Image 1 (cartoon, rainbow, N blue to C red):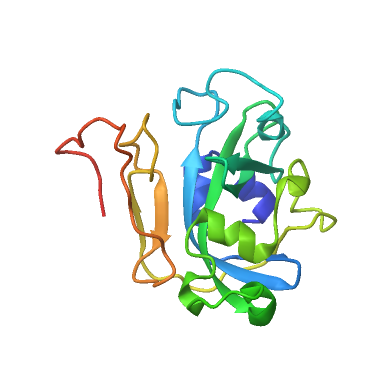
Image 2: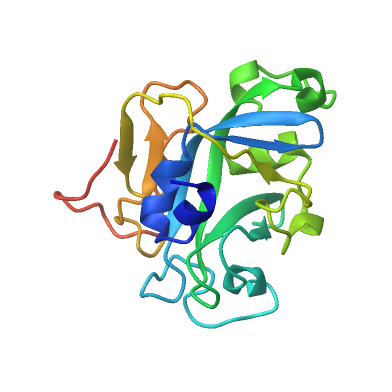
Length: 204
């Protein structure tokens, strides 16, 4: 299945299918090791598009492969890849990756362990040099600042799933996906504003 076909489907299917694939920007290539799915207006209260289309989330409605880049907590950028048809507004958040090329560019003057360069959505965008200017561009046409490399992915082993990180609503929805045992995967942190975890909720 091509990347275009994967991204034309629902986010909960696209998110695990993106694991093990490569993204490239500003001289740095990452292998994606962790993702998180959001269902847009289709009953997902954790999604930025849950209530309506706004200036901030407009890119989520532009169809598969469009980047939605937003500023989180007034501190850092996060990058999502939209899924499904135009106006559906579903997306996959890129949560973590492993630098496989461009290590010196990825460091950008920082002294951190290699595993931590893109361990978490804020570090991932910083390592790739992605900010709001990438919002609304498409990563499938090869013209934008971020490119999702097409072609077969390398074997990823076991893919695990569990509740999404840091969201106060829809916190138990098991739409966070990661490559089991990969050291670049970020730790699970439940939002203090989320309801107490249910006994039957999926967790790490």
